Image: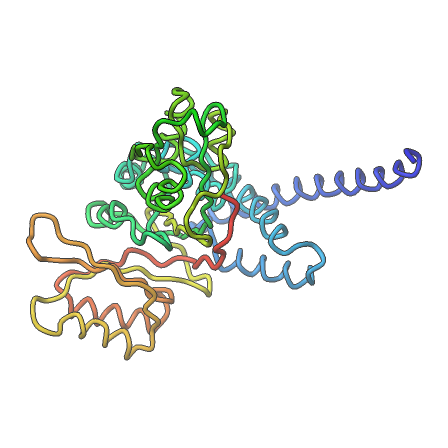
Length: 362
């Protein structure tokens, strides 16, 4: 039997060696492109070019190799080659192994440098001050809605949205021993606690919950205390040497969180983009309806609208809007000019490639 396997394994080894040599060749070409872009002062990231690569490879593949795996492999190759042109430091809501950390790795790959922050506001501050090129923050969950600390930070810090990531979130109950009887307190971020409230009520009815600033912090606490259970990611299990008590304790399947990538500049059009705005309307009857009418007349799909109170001004609100399209699209550009003239406050938060992938192993 071993002799039958030998020529097959030799064939696989030969293919692997060829792949490695081609990867090194691709990396060298990517570095050359980086040098040429430096000379012409062009942006390192071209979202349209990357989208075209994925579409071309998917078409050539014709479904032979699993498309999702193919995209994942080439995403890591492309991001690694892009990072060879410019090293990237990404700040995220820490500590290590939070869902935000996972979203960062999904977007930037494993070759970027990741810096954990204690709060979402700290992520914005790091990017605004230029200490990290990018930050990644949660903005909304399909079950619990908007993450208000992220929306409020856009009102306080000057950054631009560069991209988005969607991840299907699976919550695991973990602790040191893996025995549910050892758990006296369940710690996690407020959103996972809310997303698992019915499971906790049914299976741990007398066990108090402890809200902390991230799932990673909860996992860290569980690693230091045998009586604390944490609701955390699969990455946290490995990072903090914890045992799984129960997998998938979320109350609803299909629980998806959307994350935003923030930086100093938004990228060029990719052909499938989203534009985010922050608006304040005039204090008069029908003002909000005027804004919505402008968007409707322009034939633009309004994907999201969310209001937030302005701190220090009673009953005054700003509105977050997501429009489908890029600021360089004529209809979006003209609409924004009209809104800028119409609104008491107008800020373009960014235009960026849309994420249509809502499934990921979390």
